[in-house]
Length: 247
Image 1 (cartoon, rainbow, N blue to C red):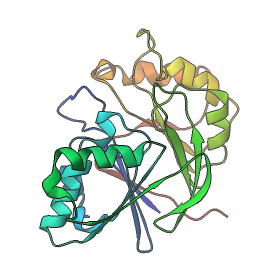
Image 2: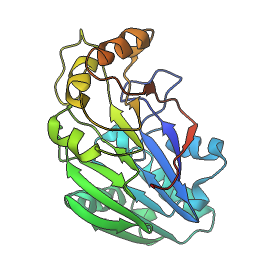
Image 3: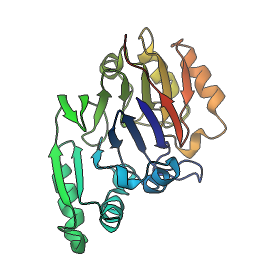
Image 4: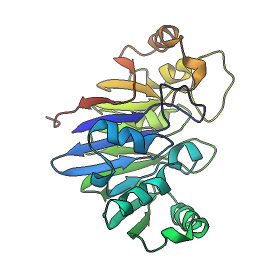
């Protein structure tokens, strides 16, 4: 499985990090997780392109996770593609219907299939997916793919989410701010380290990074390491990691 971080930033742009998007590919299977501003551009830079993305899985509906969804629909239509599946938590159908109501010329341009999912197990683009409700300001789901890669979505760090990621080869986890920022709905490094302590995860990538984290990566990693001794790194836009099959 190849995992490409298309966007590792947040609602506040830095110029280096676009908003949230993660591309998963394996053996002809492809799914785009979240579609924030800039993700359509990053898809082209990745060499995959929007033509090859026919399934989008949303963690939640905040603008920095869905801003390029309608541009993706239009790009696929203009490129002659005729299908797109959008999967996400409750409210996803209302989101898509609302976008198409405003931009009504896009209605019926694609064979558009919308599916809402709840915590539990299901299949998306032939990936076996488990979903877990996170702690955020709106309904949000964390996803685990083929029992190998877990994405926290937006969430505070808490024991249930750490347990959900247990045994993953790779965990991409929200770590939006350094410790001196008073924040809810997102974790700080200390809180994340405390919740990951004692858990078995192959590697952790920190993502959803606000500009407040610029120049402070070392201290953030040190803060996590006070409690969690695993391999922790910062995700970067367009970085691809390969995850082998579980043995």
